[in-house]
Amino acid sequence: MRALFICKRRPQGRDLLDRPYGRFYHLPVNLAQRGHHVRVLLCSHHNVKPEARSSDGVEWISNDLRTLGPFALLQELEREAKSFKPDWVIACSDAWYGYLAHRLAESTGAQLAVDAYDNYESYMPWNLPLHWGWRRAVGRARLVTAAGPQLAERLQSHRRGGAPVAILPMAADPEFRPLDRDSCRTSLGLDVDATYVGYVGSWSANRGSNMLIDAFRLARKSRPDLQLLLSGKPPRDVLAEEGVMATGYLPDEAMPMLLNSLDLACIVTAETGFGRYSYPAKLCEAMACQVPVLATATAAVNWMLDASEDHLSPVGDAQEFSRRMLKLLDRPVAAYPAAPTWDSIAAEMEALLAAGANP
Image (cartoon, rainbow, N blue to C red; front, side, top):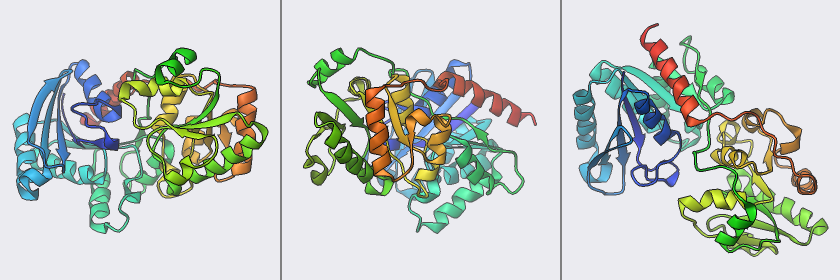
């Protein structure tokens, strides 16, 4: 099978040529390891030169919108696609790539597959032409995959009787695994004896992050020693809270150590057009590290945690989140559903592509 993926070069801020990450990298690579011919077309808008390299059995070809301009970029993508002669064109990363993959599939005569991990229509909701193009791609695709059942149901509404949307869940990258907590804390310059509640990810009031501060403030009344450890550079008003500290931006290899340093990892989402269909990678990573987790119980997160009451708290309820935070700190629980790996998920994708090519 010849599989042509098309994806943005920096999904979730990670440059795939230099910082391999997530489904955007591991699905193509695992398909290549299974003996398929795989090429990935990457697009960026950072005014960088075109680049091509082969690694991990995959051809990676990057072009830039600002360098080439929109029309030349489209021509280059079509040239690369036609030269590869794909059996499948597979869209990844956001709504733009659904549109582009649809165009490339039509120009090459290949089958179209669309893989979604978020509700892309919650991005730039004002851009209706883009969302119409996305829906058209989802409706025309031979195969559509989603990161969970809530998103699958939403995408199915664009299918108008098309084949059922299949589920290819999120997974942790292989480097996320249990590590010695004290060693991790020492490596990161953290207090070995402290009690750390952690939040790893971007800070966004629209995604419910501020509720965590309210819950932490309440919990600290009972546990004055409690510290909230945040990654990156959260807002100043957040850092001004007593007991809150931030690590700054850490290198990729330090992220498993950060998660393994925590007594409790907090995953916060909200009931929004984005949050209802969000399957957080950070939740997968914390579970892979066997760190106790407390998460807000959107339907998507509830599904990921198999409705485990030990790890879930009502959305937006700081008081209840605080109560359950203290309970988990007193009696840590890190029992989770069996987790898929990118290798097992790629095997599912391989089977779906084979079935779609031979209906």
